[in-house]
Length: 553
Image 1 (cartoon, rainbow, N blue to C red):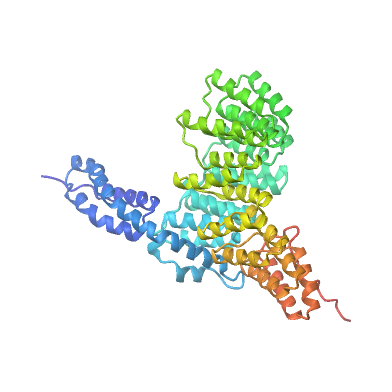
Image 2: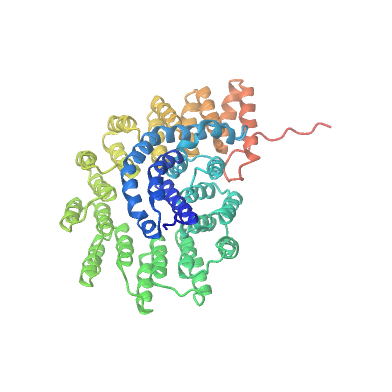
């Protein structure tokens, strides 16, 4: 007599299938649709031998279903992600809780892993208030349809630590440790330790590492990989004295490897000290560590950044002699070096060599070559590279735009910048902070406040909360030309979105608003600033509002 397959085995297969599909970007609705397709396969499998063949049968159903899943995901993604990002950024904070709005605006059908990751990515890129991102992630965790990923968790952690919400960041790590410990990775550890090393003391960073070992990564024996994360936290902040100290303190417990040495070498490179880089390199070799591709890339970059292209090329040749194959990153670094040395001919030769080595140039390689052309004042050829990239399906990123804007500002002035600016807006590209500030400054000092305000409104409509430096530039430009009302409105938009304004901006608005008799508007800004202080961590340079009135006795 044939036996029905064990119910527990079937249940585990279905649960595993659900996990895989949700991770792959399919929502719960899509999963239920597929389950109707594959359940007959499970039911017809009436003995163990047939059950073993289930994965192959399911694979066929999954492959058939994938195109549907992806098309649904694609159609939902762009418009819905942008809409939700804008709703979160525009939400008045902290006057009203965000959770009810999220419940009303986000349906369970779209709450897939990829959806949450993309929204968090946009919130990070648009400098959203960290508490809003945290609330969105917690909202997602509370839905059974959502299968959390390390990427979503890491993005939330990154947003919180960037804004110095360390209390909330630890709270999040503890919650994940309790509910989804598999999401804890070396990357999440690195995000936390790097920010603590940047904003806090050496002792605080070491204490955080020990806390992670004892109460966050419970049951995991820390080894060299975890030690390397701690070391990198100091090296990325150029704290080489602290990095050396922690190496001497813990090297007996955590045996250093080549990656450990490369991290230290990178730290010396970031400090801009070529002598220190070479001294440590020879110490590394003396200790018996074999240099690898990463080691050479770091040394080449150190020389190229100092304009020593010949030394970089010497190391490039040495790599090939010792059978250490140069990578695309190696050649891209040398192209940058040729640009710094203003050697456009060598940059072109190196760029052409990428294809000769059967490698494919990526966005970074094109950016490096574009930068080299701009440094040699060949703006026309540099601008032409954007068209070449588009023809070849290679995306433009923020560095692409920033590099070309820099060249146009120096050569063609307002006309060239405006042409690229309008093209960028037409493509719907949202630049990052550095480029936003650069454009805002350029528009304001060239008396094009119409473009500055147009740019600000574009960013706000795209769900972006511009950095306070951009607001500083815009408010200064507006107030200096008597446009105080518009300066007030832009500042209010920033505060509405749960972001600080600088003390300089508030004092400027205070002076100009009092001059025009707008005391009520000044009090409104003061109220909003003081309300934010009740929920945001204190930060140097941010506005604290009006001083308290003296007590009358």
